[in-house]
Length: 336
Image 1 (cartoon, rainbow, N blue to C red):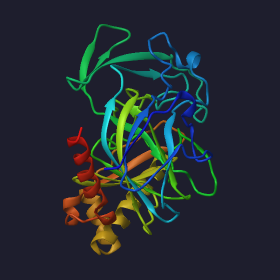
Image 2 (image 1 turned 30 degrees about the vertical axis):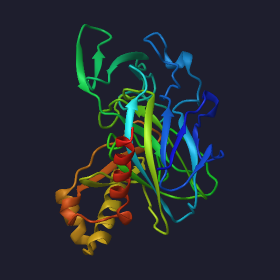
Image 3 (image 1 turned 135 degrees about the horizontal axis):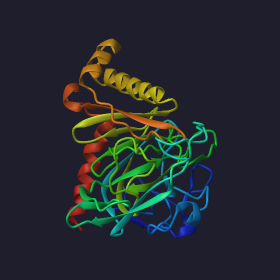
Image 4 (image 1 turned 60 degrees about the vertical axis):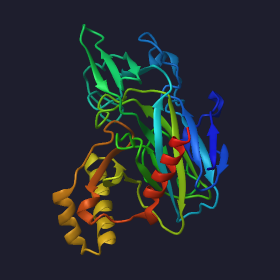
């Protein structure tokens, strides 16, 4: 088994997709062990560490990478299977911001009311019990919630030599912030430049759908990703596959356009997999699908369209990459 380990120094972190050279080259079939820093670069460690004081814009939401995948060319698809995602520390943080989030005025949603307070919450991360502990800042309330690690940000370099801030989700991936990107899931990303140049970051111990306040339970992660390359198969928008579901993503503003993109991709994908007439596929997705929200606070919003594979007859997609990578991940875990 080909295993590659990479832990970036702070100066090695990237804040864009595109616009910088690869940190390493990996071959298809490689299992990559990564360390990813949290969205604040580890600078917010206590309730007194306000991001506006300890962080510097635009150096937020760092990603680890990019990685050049040998043989990847425009028109191909990268398959990244998340073998494991585990918190690297026993604490995590979340915040509210004066001008960021779904329920506050922003630079594009101008309001006369005062901005929200900037407040930091520190969560205890109990990896052994598989919980995180929420403590109210303005009261004695506390509660445990299940640990459900995921990555908010994964993507490849955009086309046409473009560089996009990591906070922006689009057709290249980016900051989609969907809890569906957990261990056991494979994400498919269309290759736009030679090598693909994928990167991963923005670990969350858990996140509600929508990431309503603008941040999740933000944490550094030790993550293992199995990499595959599907030659000659394009992917218009990031797609996800779990053992039981196929999922399409769409990122745009307004939110209904993100919804339409994800639903359109799932309907046309389902039609191509089954041979159904497009309207028949439209009807099937309409009655059997789900629509989890990714984020409703970033520069673009993200929606997910999700359908059980059983409704499609259990199709094999992307040359059965998910099954192969799942098996490779199980082999990796059993060897550790």
